[in-house]
Image (tube, rainbow, N blue to C red; front, side, top):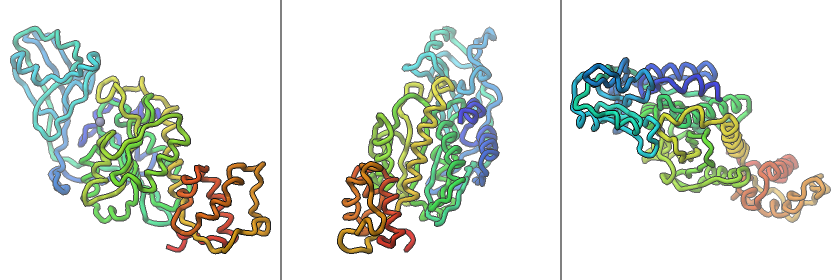
Length: 416
Ligand SMILES: [Zn+2]
């Protein structure tokens, strides 16, 4: 995962740009991608795909020719989607177009004006005091042209075409947590899920934030009814605890599985309802007319957010692994889960069916199997039972699988 991040992090991955396309190309060499191309100007419900943007050169000089700021030093020095400019401006006018971070005066902030049509630079706040002259030459050689918004899609077909979507965005130039960590974790999850026999179909989408999800869904509306759940991933490499933002519905099986695993597997995590922690592509999926319950898993907030300090120094492979394993476990449960329906009457003659659980082998299961047998009326899934009895999912599943084999319960998933 760190290799992908190291290779891609410093690229100019603006929403429609060569850097974005190259990054998708890079990912497609690890996992095959179907690349959707949606041309600039395409109506995506109430939105319109913007133009492609590129910048060759950008600087601020004083009138003696001294360079005060140069895009060559850092990709974040120019506002993403800035208009071109070549002009001498007053200090006052320049300051209106200089963006800084007061909280992190040594860092360059990430600013974007995709739809506002303005020009601007980003600079360390503690460098503002260097602007003492009356006039400056500002130069931004940027270009707007027709292009294609690109969305990378990797599909792993399951037994059913009911789909779980994993979404991450790729459009934050020269930053790591937001948003490459979500991409790196997602790619690794795709590799792991590709080796399994899955019930669900899994779709991994790599998009430019918000507009990418809107473009993909609006141009592929037939996919929407198939997507049963979604997970949005980003900001997974910093040292904060995990944050689970629930779907808009808030109490779907996916929401409850994520909470259950975070409680059991993590020392600490926080949880909040929809729109109380972050706002990303899950707003599109949870949005009106789409209505896909999508949770978000991140380690938000962190102090380096949207600045040049969100770099390789603050992420670790170990934390990415921890997030990846957590999400793989969520998918493992949701994929294996099913509703068992009782086919027996009275307490089961356990030893007759070789179902007796020795307390020396599994004390928790030994104490609970009677309760499991009382919960097989077809209104609860295996996960519901595990959650209610505060048991390990695999223990309940193993026991119920034995009942199924002995034809004592019916697996409702096979009867759909
Ligand atoms: Zn962001």
